[in-house]
Image 1 (cartoon, helix red, strand yellow):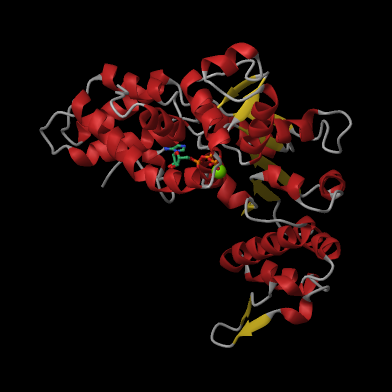
Image 2 (cartoon, rainbow, N blue to C red):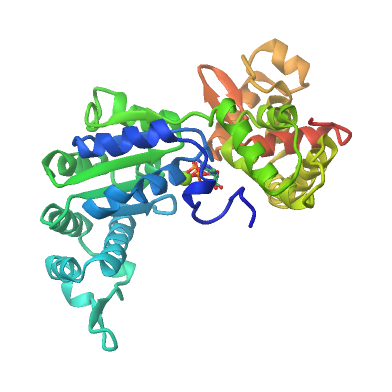
Length: 380
Ligand SMILES: Nc1ncnc2c1ncn2[C@@H]1O[C@H](COP(=O)(O)OP(=O)(O)OP(=O)(O)O)[C@@H](O)[C@H]1O
Ligand SMILES: [Mg+2]
C-alpha cells in the first residue's frame, strides 16, 4: 500500500500532523463554538474536517454532516444537497432520527419514496421538487435542533453562497446559526477574501459569529520525518534535503507534495534509492499528466490574457502589473488592456491578488506555464 494518499479518505496512520488544529476544532465545538476554516486551495481543509469527524469521542457524541457546495448555484440547490446529506447520514446512523427527519420535512414530505425491501424511506426527491427552499431549510434546521444528539454541520467551499442569485442567503443562515443551540457549524472556504469578508466585516451578517481558523502548510519539521518514516518502513531510501527541495518547490502545498511522494514511492523498489533524479522525473511526469487539462484551458484563453498569465507566472509575485515598467518588461499592450485581462483571469480564478500582488494560486499550473515558456527549465 502506498502511504502517501491522494484520493479518498486517509486512515489516521497516513494522516500527517494537524494535531493542534484538530484539537482546537474538536474542543471548540464541544465548547459551543462555530468555525470558519480558511486556506488556499488543496492545503487540507476538507481532509482536516473528515479527520475531526472520525475522532472517537466525536463519533459517539454527535451527528456529523458534511456538504460540499462548490457545484451549487442557488439556495434551492443548497437546500437540496443539504437535505440529501442529512438524509444519507441519518440513514446510516439512526432510524429513529431518519423517520423524524422525513416527517419533519412537511414542505416536501409527500415526495419521499419508500424502499419495500428495507422498509426504510428512500431519498427519491428531485431538485425541482424543492419549491420553497427557505421553508424547507427551516424544516431541516428544526430537525437538527430537535435531534437526540448535538449536530455538527460543515459547509465546504462556503464562498459559493456569494455567487447565488439570492442576496439574502448570508443573513438567512446567520439567523439560523444564532437560534440553534443543538447545532455547531464549520464553514470552510478557499477564497480567502470572499470568506474572510463574510466573517470579519462588521457590516455583514456573520460578523463575530465564528472563530476563524487559518490553515497553513504542514510544517517542514513534521513533514520531513513523516516522509522519511514511510520510505524507510518500506526499505526505500530518501535524503531529507531532497524532501525539503520538493517541499520548497511547492511551497508546502499539501496536495502537490503528497502527490510527488506518492508517485516517487511507487517509482522505487524496496532497497532502492529515491534520488533527486527520480524526484525530477516524477515531477515532470506529474506536470505532463496535469498538462492535458491545462492545455485545454489555455486553448480557450485569448492571447492577451495569456501574455499576462505568463508574465505573472514568471514574476511569481507580480506587483504594479498596470505600471509602465511591468508592461515594458513583458511587452504587454497597455495599462487598460492589462486591467481588462487581469479582471477576466481573476474571474476564472487563474490568478489571485493579495495586497496588490498578483500570483497564480495553482502552483502546478504556474510550473506548467514556466515549463511552457522554457521547455529546458529544471525545477529541482
Ligand atoms: N494531513 C494530511 N496528511 C496527508 N495528506 C493530506 C493531509 N491533508 C491533506 N492531504 C492531501 O492533500 C490533498 C488536498 O487535501 P484537501 O482536499 O483536504 O484540501 P482542501 O484544502 O480541501 O482543497 P480545496 O481547496 O481544493 O478544496 C488531498 O489529496 C489529501 O489527500
Ligand atoms: Mg476542500
